[in-house]
Every structure is written in C-alpha cells, then in structure tokens.
Length: 166
Image (tube, rainbow, N blue to C red; front, side, top):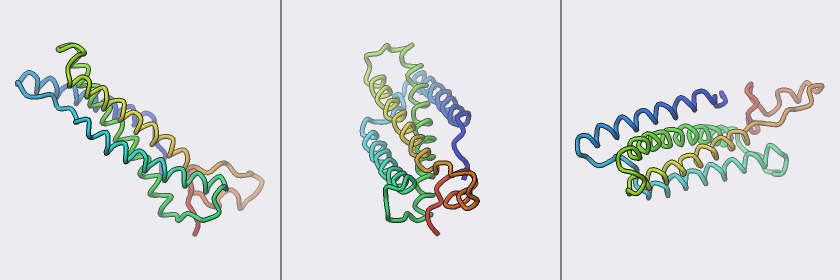
C-alpha cells in the first residue's frame, strides 16, 4: 500500500478550491443559494474522524507492543485505507469551502450565514484531514534492527505499514 503524497493532497485541496470558487460564482450570479454544507454535516465528519482515530489508536497500540491481542491484517489495512480516505475527503471539503469563502468574502463580507458555515466546515474538514494523516503514521511500523534478517520483513509490507498477524 502506498503512503500519502503531500503533493497529491495539496493538488486535491487546490482543485477543490477552484471548483468551490467557480460553482459559488456561477450560482451567485444566477441568483441561487451558495452551495455550502449544513453545519449538521460536522456531526458526520466528526463521527468519521473519531472512528478513524479509535481504529488508529488500536493499530498503534499493537505496533508499539502495548497490546497483547493481535490485530488482523484486514483490520490494519482497513484502518490505513480509512485514514487515507479521511485525508482526501477532508482536503476536498476544505478546498471546496475555501473557494466559497474566497468568493463570498469579496462579495458579501464576513457577516453572512454562508461565510460562518463555510468557516465551520473548513475547520472541521482540516481536523478530519489532520487526524487521517496522523492515523496513517500510526499504521507504519517502527524501523527494526537492520542486523536482524527476520526483523526486516516481519509484520510489515514493502512501504513499512503494519501487516498484522498471519
């Protein structure tokens, strides 16, 4: 499994920002409401973020030797995929709302409900992305002693991620 690449995450953020600004400009000039997520979306994002963090802590406890119960390879892989998906989803949502904020701040100032909602969603999405990034790091095993041949490959894949037990 490949690790996250900061350039791809930044690209997703920039594309989301451009898309958000463009759609905001088109909808505002057509007389439609600004396309921001409702604040209740924070509940869903928060639940996904907490779940990602709980699963990541479980993997981290296993990889650091603090947990005696083994973790299945499928659970470790699912945790890694969820963490990476959280980073990309958080970057996309943050970019979208940053683009909307850029358009709204120039047009309506900072007092509108859409600006407040966009700020809230941007903050929540950034937290989601940061937690996903941290949990991805939790899924990496610490480096083994290089002198031990079995320590080089045991329990991890070619990228250094936890592979669980067989």
